Image 1 (cartoon, one colour):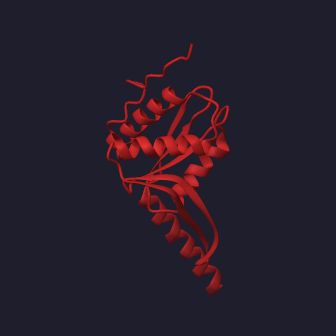
Image 2: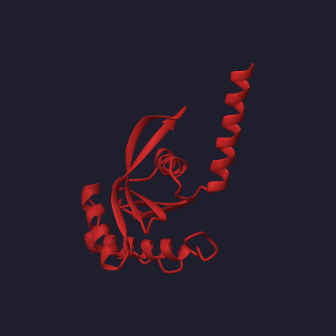
Length: 156
């Protein structure tokens, strides 16, 4: 018999940025997980979550392009699985267990964009949810420090 997963009360995110939105997304994630179970490819879960989110009235972009810059030049491009309401990046996995590389992928997606909130959702044997925040003020400070370092190197 399949175990149903109920996230009620697991994540008290009432004080977090975009908490209402991420709470709703997490509820929908668990609904998709309970209905599909474990074992499909990531793309199946992505399409299922996309369907349910749009039915719930969310504006969702699938395979959102993210460009990575170095010294003002594009050095790479990759795609976030979903962007919801132009506020939250969602990375999906369908693996046994999340690890630090998956967390780093989400953080780097936040660093490379103006988005500040991200969700990492795993449709593994047991569902996993990770919520990350990377404040835009912090991104600006890093860019300012990097610019100051670059200027120092140029003037030395």
